[in-house]
Image 1 (cartoon, helix red, strand yellow):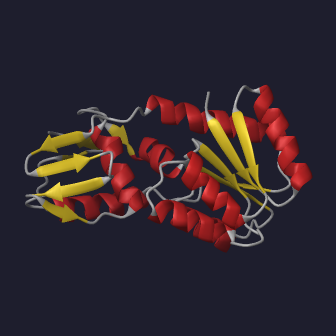
Image 2 (tube, helix red, strand yellow):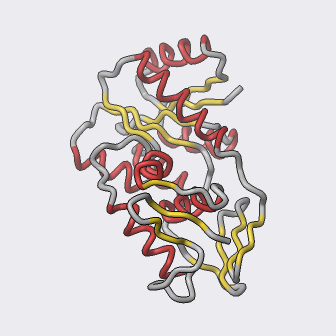
Image 3 (cartoon, helix red, strand yellow):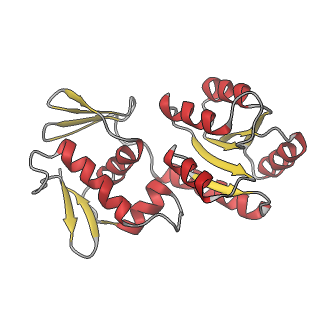
Length: 226
């Protein structure tokens, strides 16, 4: 069963969430400050982190940024009383998977956790090395090579790349990609997918204006062609 880490300085709230998650069958740990929470993520590699923002020791945004910079694969659900749009946008720009504001509904939180873990399971990691044309993707190191040279992609562009490649030619709509790569975020416009697709084409296609591998399907979405 999945391992979950709660990084929350309110010990009573953390204990209550842990109790309910354990009833669901998860293995749950708690960290009461940001610094020890980050160390536990490094040591335990949990499947999912429930992360508060206003933490002693190290701010939640700093914890999230470190997790993503170190390319740890854990999913992150921010659970915070800070619900201002600027905070939510910053969380997603730092590559949070979900953002839930306090006060929250417990059953909704449990369902969000279950949904995140289920999607991660359905998106089973593809083979370590994926090669097409002059492109090679190493999913273990989350690295991309073109003609043997490293290609730098933003975290969201990399997720979008993998989401398309794993579909093996099936069409993905923009809304499907928004749900899979950005999560259920109503304020994210569908043109966000297009801008990240433009980055992928610019860096991986020989002729970005006439893409060979990442094809637009008119009035539908995108399709990967090996």
